[in-house]
Image (cartoon, rainbow over all chains, first blue to last red; front, side, top):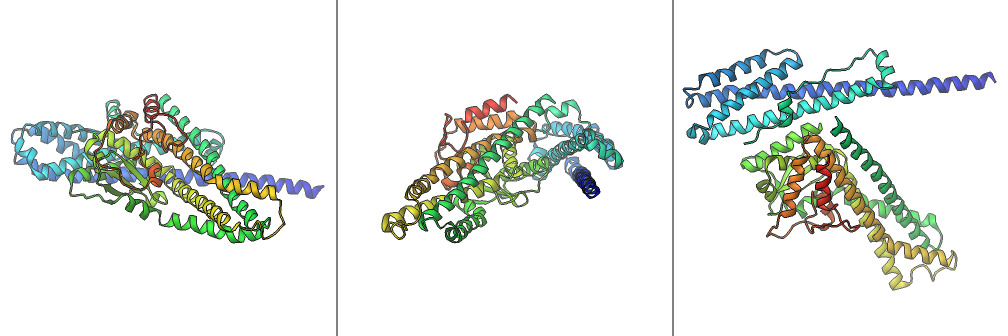
Length: 185
Length: 302
């Protein structure tokens, strides 16, 4: 009789350990996925900031009377370079997106610039980087949402508490941006 | 939020149905192998299995391992050229969709053809291939191409590329076995005359089953294909957050009347975004894809 009770207790304990093991791994894996998807965004942000000096160099010779437009781009870039938190990075990037949008709009008035091979390439690549940022941001929010769902619902909630885990912040994306996540040209 | 839940519901329902269909396929395959045993060895299933299973599994395995090369050369696809602006932007789109899906970048191929079409293949998501026709690159707008790429990326993410590759191989194996049985009965009367053991009625039923099996397996395979198409449509819409892009692309495919003849092999037709060989507008159990109008309707209701 005692033996049977012992066996049943061992089975129950093993069962709980197994579930805990599963949830522990799942939570850690999801955290890694969130960190990894932030790293993705970071790579794209850096790539974008690196492209800006090239763009300025190309544009400078053509756009002599658009000081304000050019300044805005430079300002947004330095904001991006000094940004610390995730949200600061994203906000600076949104600023840069706006500044570049007006630069490319103004560029329409300079046929010579528009025909410049280098400029065309940079424009393609900047647009591509911007789209990549938009999609990696979306992916970041997708994995963060999945993570939050796990640790906020039962039974993940119970394990997350014991592992001292809290929900992660999603990236706030401006409303207008969400409607059209990509620039079309 | 409400929109998203709807898409996720579509996905869940589709997954369930695919599991049912795939199990039926596996069951059919096992049943065919066992029937063969019964026919050829008059009831001695053990000997039959020793004989039939290695052949069947070997066939599936070989077809599977050369599948990517087979598909690419049948489509006469070539790697996309980053120096051509159209193809460079295509590579860019694929990369963006890979990021949105959280997948590694697939290899990007182009098929020289006037048709608007695209397909994905590969054995696992890490080694996938995406291919679009030059017609698609030329005729589709940015958001439409993006919708199509999201659809293909979903095929990769859902492991459809593997499911379809394996089912193609299984359908092929069943067809091969069936043909072998048919011809061996035709020429020599098979094992029936050799031994008196085994129940004659069961043997006759087994023969009928094996001869009909290719039809069942083909229908099952087509049903899987159609299910996976809906699933990839809704997953793709979830990736771009823009069902309209794919809906417009499908509309263009529907209206498109290409001059050039479609290339490629018919067995890989289910891999394409729309069947390159025929456009069906009605619900048919013989179709590789659901009717295009129904797909557009479902996308627009998301």
